[in-house]
Image 1 (spheres, rainbow, N blue to C red):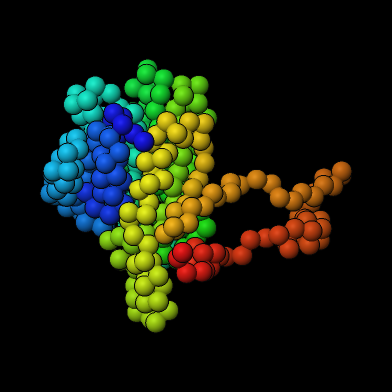
Image 2: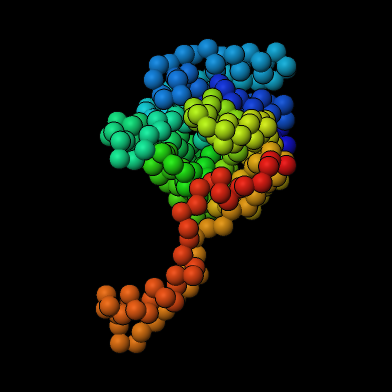
Length: 301
């Protein structure tokens, strides 16, 4: 599917990123395996995970190099792209998968918790995407695959930083798709359902939480990789600006915000008439405070 393409996968030392890097290589891509090697909360660093994935790819006859830069640093992001150009002469695909978690209920969330998560997820996706954009424009081709989350698309407890970053990635992806369509560059999002070390931080203090985690454990990181490879391939020509989800063997296409109701007063509105007329007209269509688990309530298929 991606024979000869040069692919950068961020956060590729473990979990979903690792599986994507392995499958990209299996399908003939030359892979830049990026992983800073930090802990789930972003602290520390370790070159081991990226190197291990590269060794696994090369041992299987594939082609890969390691990069251990941080997506949160623009200079590191630029170095990732330069590594691809220096090693393989081009860059064809960017998979923005790197991420961290610092979950806490909103009224206890610190500014460092907010800044660090936004820096890795949202700024990181911008840094890497922008660094590749110049080359994509010059060669008039390229594909971005960004990872979002139902925590942003729908909602979740204790993840205001993560949710904001992941919904921001959706806006970033759509803007890239619009701005770079003229250069034959595609940009899409995947919202994964998969067990990973980040998901492993979810509390399991109650029977309900334990049952939820057991369901999630059925959804392996490798389930996410085929869609990422497809979106990176020429077979996905014309597929851009979309939000997909993968939940075990199910693939979803998510809706995007559009108006669903309207009300009009020719004489204009006052706060009182809004209360008297707008709310009764629209309230039946207000969205409840759903979480991801409320919407995806059935067992993984």
